[in-house]
Amino acid sequence: MTILLLESLHPEAEALLAGAGEIVRAKDPNAPDCDFGAVRAILTRGRGRIPDALLARCPALRVVARAGVGLDNLDTAAAARRGIPVVFAPGGNSLTVAEHTLALVLDLVRGITRSANQAAAGRWEDRGSYAGNEIRGLVLGVLGFGAIGQRVAKLADAFGMRVVVLAHRDRSVPAPYEAASLPDVLRVADVVTLHLPLTPATKGLLGANELAAMKAGAFLVNTARGALIDGVALRAALAAGRLGGFAADVLEQEPPAPNDPLLRDGRVLLTPHVASLTALTYRAMCVDTARNVAAILRGESPDARSLFRG
Image 1 (cartoon, rainbow, N blue to C red):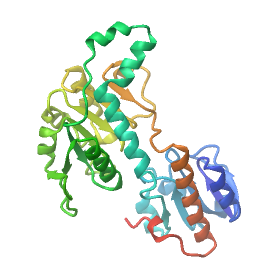
Image 2: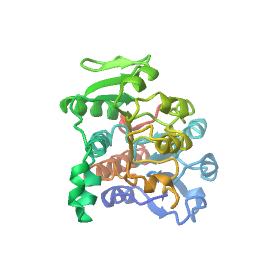
Image 3: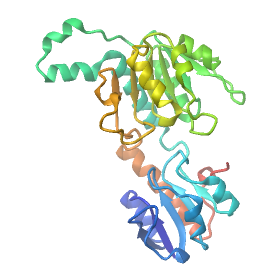
Image 4: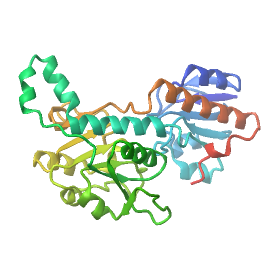
């Protein structure tokens, strides 16, 4: 029984999988070097893709999995057509991504990294032109009110922010938060933060019109998926001085091109997709995913919450 890993996992997770079959590591995620007929499970994290073509090459496949939350790197529709269960780690990164989001909000609004760089460069006198603000009293617009969005709202409320959430027809917004339409969220928010999944309906959700509808000088934060924002429109809005700043852990192209203007803009704060890579969360997502995959391979029932329902 072969278990194909498109990316490495936490050592404890790999040890769990080794007890259920032989681990084969893909040298090339697009053309793994293994006996596809023997593959019973395929696991990835965020970069290795599991398309229908790969599923088709593995006739004995019993489970595919991502040690993470989003499933846009896995063809879930193709897996469903083939009757292959999809295992992932829903909610596994909600606490750490929410914490990272608040860290970016604080840094962006207060100018912490910018000031630290000035001090490191010996420009102590730049404190005379310091223009940072407090987040207390600002309006935070939350687009996406799943586990991460809810946690961000809770943390922001603790900091004294007023929280306005994008209304969703299937989910009520509890007090003290307010629900509003997208145009109204963009109109009132001092900081907008994205926590939506990437789907055909949400791709490019914030385009030129939406960015123009934001408050002049407002801040935009994205720790969800880069393609939620129209990249051309984002760079144009920054160049025109419409946005006060942009912070993100995700981009539509990762890594960005060396000449990307975002890398040279002092109002931009980027981290390289590390919000979920804290030691605690990385281990938990990998181990939980491996445990559920191993259960399926043994003919046992996995945690029902780990199965993607579509």
